[in-house]
Image (cartoon, rainbow, N blue to C red; front, side, top):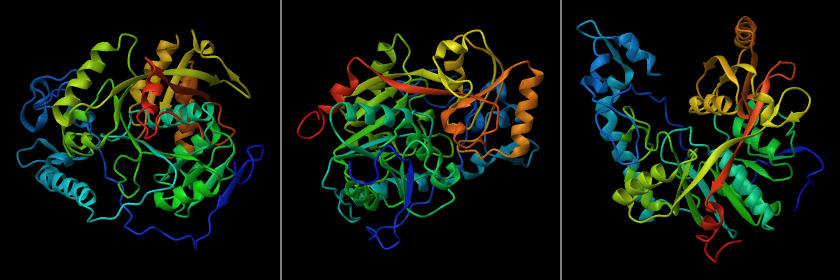
Length: 422
């Protein structure tokens, strides 16, 4: 592969003079509201739910604003009659405007009113229809490794969400040389787990794709790319979480859908992630929902499993967690899945603290976590995405998870590429 070799870690700041491919930079979408149990509507393939009452709250939650706020990240304000009104309630009248804007933008690209750009190499997009927590990073890692095994030279494009630097960057090697704050949580984790693979961090993914090609890539994997329509793709993979496929089935502020379900018409395939051992029912239910909203699209499946755990200088098998008393913390989209993985490995979860996605830990927070774990007689443990943001002297175990295809999903996926499998 062109550029610096994999034997040497490097992070290169790309020159400012590289041409930008036009278009405006999108602002990240705002806060998400976790809905309480009980929903006003259920979609096929969406487990759970209940009878919802006023403001989307179940009957048992009415008149209990404290419980409502416990389920919601949006702050509450006093209502006229004394009960709490969440920010989601106040923003509810804007929901139709958000939906209209999303549809208008997608339609403008579809009709050519907004320009899109094509690279000279295949582009594989990995994205989702909901906000966060579907397992995009483990899926990107799994697909890149599979492509390498097939003799391809992949690169990864990432925006580097919430990073402190706006400069386009190229990370090579397990130690990119800059903190995760500068390049982003996901790119830092990708660089460490995919040594030698170019990880291009650029808000302009078209320019980033050209950078990847200049460093020898013959296929580009676009991380979190389903809504990034400026860069044309040859394969559009949409991830849905088996435990909550459609994020409540609504757009913000009442749900976690980024786009209406009909947007699945753009997808080449849907991948149901984190499926249980008996996955047939959930995959079929998701497939029914996909057909109802977008027609016949291949529905694939993958399970998330622990691959290794770092308890000190080196790595061990997941069996090292069995019987251990752990205190878990993480700043990820769906932390419940992380806790479930630990318990499936035989660990005892003595306690946990969950933070917002992409959270930056302060010294005081880390000290508080250490004290809580000590009081519980437990060992601190976190995810790989969080570990890349921690100081080297923090005593914490780290677990890595990988996405494992079910029923030959990767082979079936690559058959959808123009020209067939790599």
